[in-house]
Amino acid sequence: QVQLVESGGGSVQAGGSLRLSCTVSGYTYTHNSNRCVGWFRQAPGKERERVAAILTGPGGADYSDSVRGRFTASQDIAKNTMYLQMNNLKPEDSAMYYCAADLTWRVYCRSDLEYNFWGQGTRVTVSS
Image (cartoon, rainbow, N blue to C red):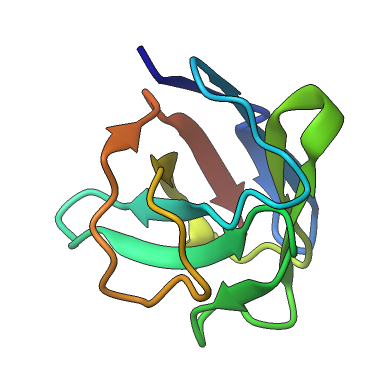
């Protein structure tokens, strides 16, 4: 059974940084995995938004316009863990953040990809 556990959320002031972690169990990533892990967020009253996705193995990442240049998705294959480094945080970044995994081999993590497995979320609060 595939499980994802996020951690690293918290409260920071605007301009601050946080690093979210997503540890996956039940599936082992390799340097040739070519599986997508997405990072999503949802604020109260708003739709869920995909902010980033990483193609595990090759490591290529894609970002939404709202976070590009501030957020960086990365991977540690040995730890079966993905990360989302969030810099220059803004109050509008406040949300529940989730990671999600898709176990189909792919060459690209398209923006409308439907993910099969989700973590429980970690909350990020950015104060002005």
